[in-house]
Image 1 (cartoon, rainbow, N blue to C red):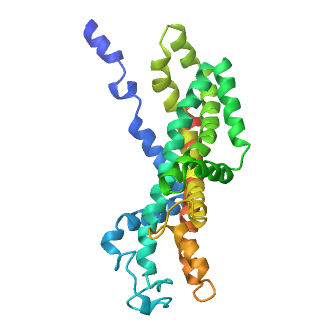
Image 2: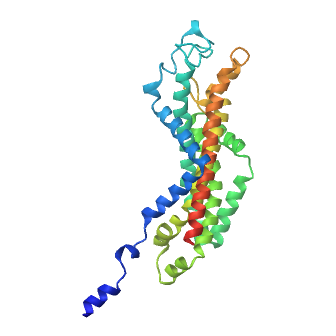
Image 3: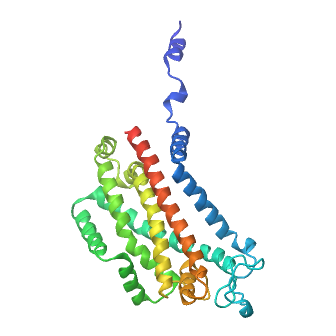
Length: 302
């Protein structure tokens, strides 16, 4: 046997040397689907999101169309879920309100992620005085109830959906900061990170390539849970008149207007309440499923 043939015979197959990332993703999806509750929650959330996005196509009326003679009507062929105190179609408003409420929650969490994750990576990786200062600032913000602190920020900046969601983003940022910092501290002590530091690899390359991918799992779980909290907070702020302002429809605004007619038409509170409850429960159950699937994947990888 020649030298080249011997090298060919002893060389391992190319497929064994490359990490099968597609198989890892398939394994995660298989574990997530095994959690029946989380998988059903994902389907329910997908239906809610798609129905909200397609509201202009499937809603039978404009969400602001007023029909005073039919105000506070019950379910009819023309108005499946009845009408509110101004004769506006409840089903149409519910669909359009979902677009506003879900976008508001996603916007607030996106702001929290943009603030909390980079600062958490910095504090956990650098440590020392930077970690101490950022940690104390986060602790101070977390001593205040989230909704109270958000109301205080809105009082300074003025009411409105954009200001309310920016306020919520700043309020929730310390929670993402703490999760990211804790995960970064754990990854920072791993051998492969220490090896990269020992050979002089700069932090600007280590953090995005070595640290961030390994802290993504707990961050994703926290984001899914935070979306549920932001959805509830938006509804509360809009109910108080500090978030979405009428006539724009959101689930919180619909709750507020429904409370005014709760004696005559209690279903006006029921339908947006059900929508908020389903979306919030779906986000929380998906978070549980992500935690289980990603947690088992992390334990196997280690």
